[in-house]
Length: 208
Length: 179
Image 1 (cartoon, helix red, strand yellow):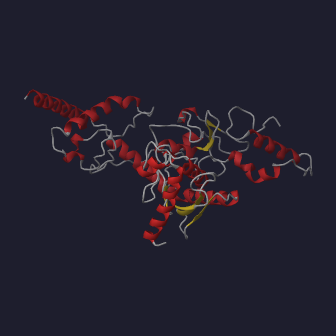
Image 2 (cartoon, rainbow over the protein chains, first blue to last red; image 1 turned 60 degrees about the vertical axis):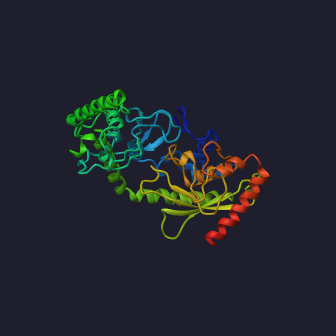
Image 3 (cartoon, rainbow over the protein chains, first blue to last red; image 1 turned 180 degrees about the vertical axis):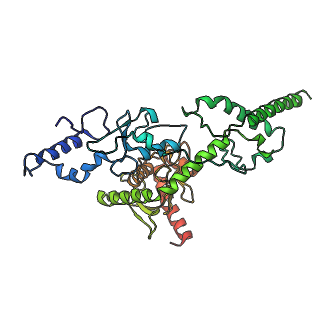
């Protein structure tokens, strides 16, 4: 009985609902205590809700709990974190969250005590580099065909952006750089060269 | 040579998106599951203020209804909306539009809505019912700082005039749509 579900700090659910759940559970011992106070009948359908994943709304599988106390299936949370690598926040309360500070939960009798975080992703997927280069380049709203811009003025902000981005790369959302990502040093070098050419060009324009 | 002027970060981003896409395809089933659960929640909630139901057989497309909040210029009106869910819902926000013409500072003539939780503030815990409730409160409390409908934003302070315009807009645009 020391495993009351509402123990522990920061559970997101309303407190009285938790109490109602505990009340719900007790009648299992005291047979037939059916006269429940108000609200208890209502919670019988929501009772499972306390252990539902906040993302898929199903009972949490490979459950992990965040430091802020919110429960998720690890696959669900993993996908959430993956869709926004730059802004890793708890979907419920927007607290900071990361792969390393969620806690896996192991229920009794589960045969597989492996850390769910090690199960997913099962293994890195094959990555194939894009043959062509229309990428989402939101920051400039240029869309595709960015490289078709005339050299000169166009290259200036472009090169500038690229090179600053490279510098900021290290602290990018705490994600270690993937080993097989083509971080082409050639490309980095070229973009720096273009930055300087563009800077010189601008300078020349100003002087002329 | 074409790629030399491209941000070197780009391949990473593309690959990442690819990867996420791959995950998405796998769990199209779980999206359906989640939408079915939401449908159940909406129906069980028994709310008279907001409601929603899939349009036809496609569970990725719903029609929602929001009643104009009491004590506002929209009182007594009821607005229909279309909700379209992306294949990676709930990791991306659904696309929601007003089907009933709505004269409101944050709704444009096509029914597009400007609401932060449907854009950059989207979170996977939002659900159909929570969105519809948010939209209902948006009706009564517009954000006049970033209007999609500048006329509505300017008129908001004159509530009597605003109410007139709401009904005028509704009449005019309903005729155009012939619905």
